[in-house]
Length: 327
Image 1: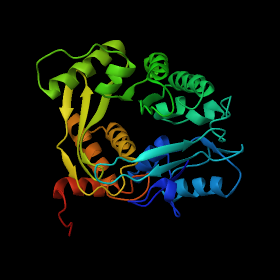
Image 2: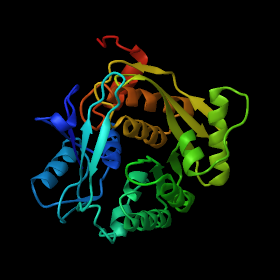
Image 3: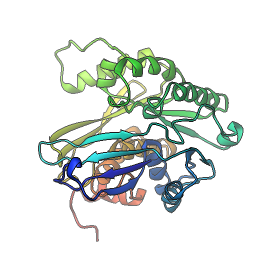
């Protein structure tokens, strides 16, 4: 989809110029994995016009296979973002209704071809929020992936402007039994899955472990849960920590103080891409979460929706430490 953003310090109602970036949750994850040397394909639908061609070129420049990118339909989904600054958070206006992708009512791909040679299918809750039809289609995709022995990765990615907590929770209860790797945190557990609130007297870490354990009990099929903890000092000053729960064990990355933030959009997708890279590369859990969080921190330092760094650059960043010149 297309993101149109204001310049820092400009209200969207008064903007005369907007910055254009292409992206989207699944697309951003695909680009991260391609940057890390994995073979990645992206399946979606774009219109047969210059904007659809721009999406194809955006993905192709990063090495993402676009042969499963369908062409047709009325328009490309867009959204507008008023950049945050200081204590004022960024705000978003969605314009996705009637897009080529959102109006799909059937899976238009040949599923055996789509899943041939595939290890992981990555999906997002944002897609389910688009329509009742896409909630059904996502479940069909998950079921087909399981039949093809493909692992299913799912980022809850709740967006309150697109659907209610009740709607999201009802979908999650249907979808999560088909998921192998899940990006979900304590707020998702509490407000979407209705996990009982933590009443212990432990540390914030103990509280998060409790929510991971409760989600694991609800969905024992999920092999791995992960999420970030973000301390927001201002719109351009955050502290980011990655967390992972696998095989009954909790892992936490070092914290990254990101100041100034150049562009926060896509930071979560860069994190998911780093986690999936760690799984595909068979990294140990601690190494995996350290890499994923560092990748997310780096994404915050560049404009655009997608991670623009290679695995080597992420590893060098981890080794060198924040702000040091790599010579």
